[in-house]
Length: 148
Image (cartoon, rainbow, N blue to C red; front, side, top):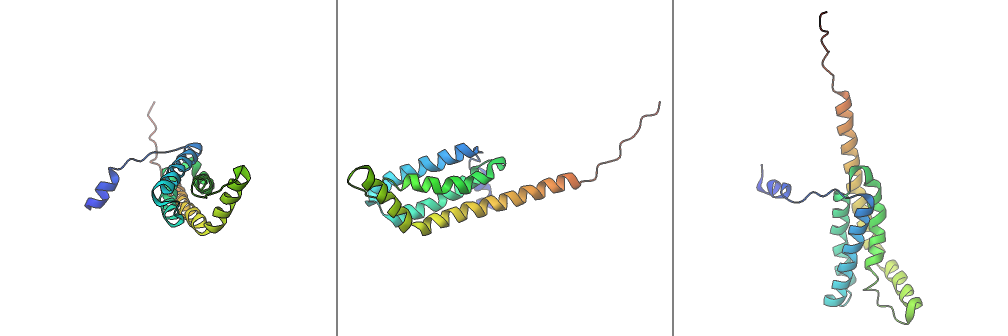
């Protein structure tokens, strides 16, 4: 096998529940939002670029039974993480308006990450359905009857 494939197989392969995947994505995006705010003064480009791999990891690490939750939890995580970089002032109303504005301005990144998560979970689901179909289509060996 190629060394890249062997290196990828050594990486952790967690299986998160739907709730766990949502919490992972939200916590990661919140931390990345604060780091972006501290280091890059809230760069929307950096935040959007960091959102794409988080979306992919969330879709890859969610359990097969909870695949539908990844494309749902990823946009929520984006909204959670955009709070630190939105730059709102003037109390709760000003902060809420800044978050809504940031979500509208960065909608391309939001749609892109959601599309990444949706494509990965769709491919995983199709592969799982094929695996199940092959498992049920295997001919079973005839059982021998024991002589009395």
